[in-house]
Length: 152
Image: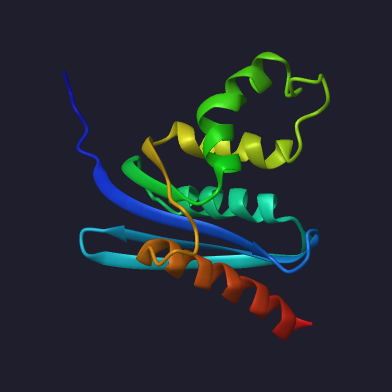
């Protein structure tokens, strides 16, 4: 049997929004074999949940090949959504428990596709309590918001 050796990658992600909705940013800090990569971006009118999702999507899509990922999020919405709720949403044609369309379905579908390429261990961390990776991701998310303000 041919076993592929996967790189071990650690990712911390976060989203930020100034108003909800309002200008928002996402950030991700990736580490692998002693190397680091910082990613961030933003949208002029968005929600915090969308930015939390974008951070994870962009981080996973930045990986050039399948990896084993330790993914740390401070969003229960993202962690529960991708590890639990998504199975019922897909079975119900992207409807929630009340039969209404799932919010942010475009991003959930993009995240579902990004996740499929990797082996991911999901970790929830309490935000803003001094966890280095979470603080770095939060700083990057706020950089994404600040870049929007500078652009216009």
